[in-house]
Length: 297
Ligand SMILES: [Zn+2]
Image (spheres, rainbow, N blue to C red):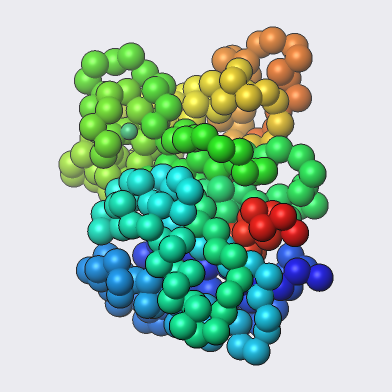
């Protein structure tokens, strides 16, 4: 029975002890108060490592750990954070080495895995849906658009930056690239496109028949369908989960309709799209399960 700690890092640090793919006890969170949510953005890397490790030590208690998994919002390779648009101070940080060394000071010697947070979501969903033996993909719709896949496969997988339009006016992606999925669906890009409206108001107005908002709603769904279709054409058919704080903007029948128009080859028809609720528990379990698999458990 594997015992691991999973950690996720975004606006908050969530930490939990995971025993046999299930959360054991309560989830720890930092910062505790909603109004301190900006705290992490202002911390330098050493302080973030310190925070993660103190949460980890508290979650582990007296348990001897088999693995530690830490999910971060960014591009991760071999334990190094290569890019982290929402926590830019982490860019270049050798997070695996830093956390391993700090944990040693506390007497914890378990192998540490650093993973992309969307991959952690995918692993958590695979575990909770009894799909640890099949390939699943997940779109996380939040400030940015994350793309996760399970099982872990070496690669870049920046699916949120899939090119979904050749329109030269589509320049809203935070990475600076033209025509990207996140440039349509990301929070910042929606704010730039509708300077006078919050995303919630845009979708509300679309419901009431506002032409400009309805046009955008269609673009939003066609963009997600296009990126999904591209993934199907490259990696094959299978299960796609949709989750994240903005998943309630998704009109599933509309998304399915557009995807159907874009995927026509009969061997690729076995895909399915499903909306699931965003849960921190799932992310934490996914981080732990990914770390266990990386450790060969
Ligand atoms: Zn981009």
